[in-house]
Length: 143
Image (tube, rainbow, N blue to C red; front, side):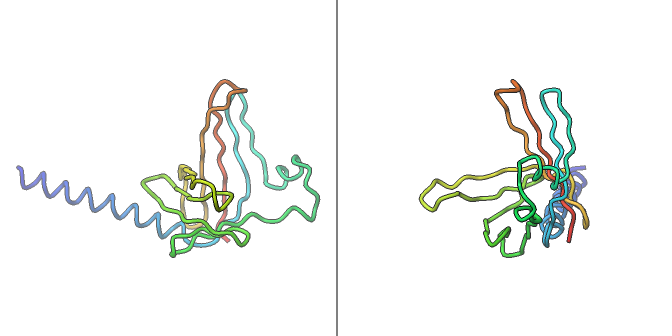
């Protein structure tokens, strides 16, 4: 019985490790941001990226595609910038700071969907004005 339990444990750990590796490989490539989902404080809203730009008052010249490129070198690239990233379970962790002399911060997002064609990242934060949590989901399409 102990041997059977040990075999099941090893098989289970192998299966979990392979899931993690498949996420590491599935995320590689270019992902274009297509839409947002925002919920919290009694609000539920879906918004295309173009609508978001328009809402923010951006003109046509400022509206460019938002594309993240995850590479096997451990960096994610966007508009000429790069930042180290890692995946731990269902968490995508991106390391970075706005200024060179600033303390390094870690942005954590939950991977709620990752297939060969679709990626959804969610982040939930407490918003004082809403007196509750707000969840923002970013929906990407592989390009």
